[in-house]
Amino acid sequence: MKKIVTVFLLISMSVSLWAQSVEESTPAQDKQLDVLLYGIDSQVIEVLESLRANKIDSYNEVLVDVFEEIRSPEIRRKILELWNDTQWAEAMPVAEQVLLHVVEDEDFDISVVQEAVSYISEMGSKENFDILLQLASNSDSRIAAPAIRGTGKLAAASEAGTEDFDSIGRPLLDLLNEAVSEAEEDVTAALIVALGELQYKPAGEKLLAIAEDEGSSNGHRCFACVSLGKIGGEKYSKAVENLYFNSPDALLRSYALAGLAEFEQDSTGILVKALKRDSFWRIRLTAAEKLGGTPPDESVDSLLRYKASEDPVPHVRKAALESLGKRKGETNNSYLGQFYLDEKNPAELRLTALNVMVENHIPDITNAVNTVMDKLWEKDDRRFLEFTCRNLSLLNWGELEVLYERMLSHSNWLIQVYGVRGVRRNQIEALYESIDALDTEESNGLLLREIRREQK
Image 1: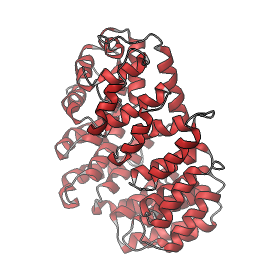
Image 2: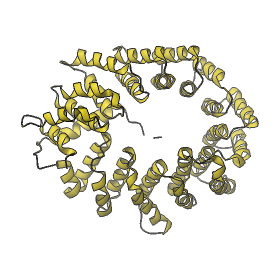
Image 3: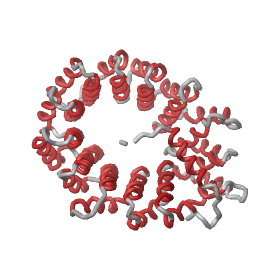
Image 4: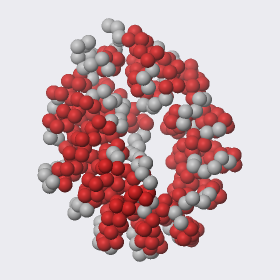
C-alpha cells in the first residue's frame, strides 16, 4: 500500500532534475548510467530520485552491483525504494541478505533494513515469513515494528488460506499477550494490524478487549476495530458497531466504521448514512472509500458523484472519485470523464479522475484526453496538458496507444519524453518506429537519452 506525494511536487522535482542536466547527450553516452557508475554520492542520489519519480526500471540490474559496492545507507535505501516502486522481484536475494545481517548480528543500518523489509513484504512469498518473524522479536522497535507489519502485508497478498497462518499468528499473539502493557506504541500497533491481516481468529478476544478498553491507547483501539472486522464474527461485529454509534471520539468512530465495512454482512446502509451526514471528514472519507466495494446500487453511485463534486474536503472528494472508478457503469464512467474536463474542478482532483479512469480501464478516457490535447496543444500556460501526459506515462494500459502516439508528435520535447516512456512501459511495439524517427540531430539531447536508454 503504499507514500503519496502530490502530483505537482513530483512534477516540480522531475523538471528540476531535468533542468540540472542541461548538457546534451551524445549517441555514445548515457549520463545517468555514468553517474550511477562513477558519480559522487550527491549525484547518484539525484539520479535515483529522478528514476523513482518516473518509475524508470532500465538500470535495475546495474544497481545490484552499485548496491554491493556503495556503503552509503541513503543510496542503498533509495535503490531498494526504486526496486520496490518498479516492482522488480529479481532483487529479492539482495533484500534477504540485508535482513540476514540483522539476524546474524552483523553491521547494518536501520533505514536500509526498514526498506528491505518493505520490499520483501511487497514482493515476497510465503517463504519469507520466517525471516520476518525472526526480526519481529528484535529488541529494537525500529526493526521489530516494520517486520511485524511486513508479515501482515505478506499475508494479505499471499494465496495461502488463513488456516495456513497458525504458525505465524501464534507467535505474534504471544508477543501481544506478553508485551501489550510495556511494548512501545508502534510495536503493539503493528501486532494488532498484522493479526487482522492474518485473519487470525484466536486473536479475536484479545483484540476485542483492546477495542473496548477506554484505558488503552486510542490508536490501538482504532486498529483493533479494523482487525476485528477482518477476523469476522457476529459478537465482534456488534461490539464494533456499538463503538461506532456510541463513542464520543470521532477518530475511533471512523476506524469502527472501517471495521464494520470489513465484516461479511452488507454495511452499505451505515456507510451511506455516514457519507451523507457525518460532520467529521475522516468518517466521510472512510465511508467514501468503503462504498467502492459494496454491491451495485444507483443511489450509492449518485451519492458518491455528489460528494466528488461538492464535499468541502478534497480528501473526501478524491476518495469518492476512486470509488466511482471501482464501481464503473456507463453513468459513472461518463461522470469521471466530464470531471476531468471541467476546468472549475481543482487540477489535482482532475488528475485523480484521469488516474482512476486508467487504473479501472474506463474507455471514456481516450475522448476526454483528446479533448484536452486539442484545447491545450498550442498553448499550455498552466501546464495541465504536461501534467496529464506525465501521469499517463506512469500508468499501465496498452489501450492508451492513440494518446501516446499524439504525445510523440508534440513539439514540446518533455511531452515527447513522456510519450516514449508510456510506449516503452506498455510495450506498444507498433509505435517503436515512431520513437526511432525522433532520433535525429535536431532532437533535444535529453529526449535522445530517453530514446536510447533501452538500446544500452
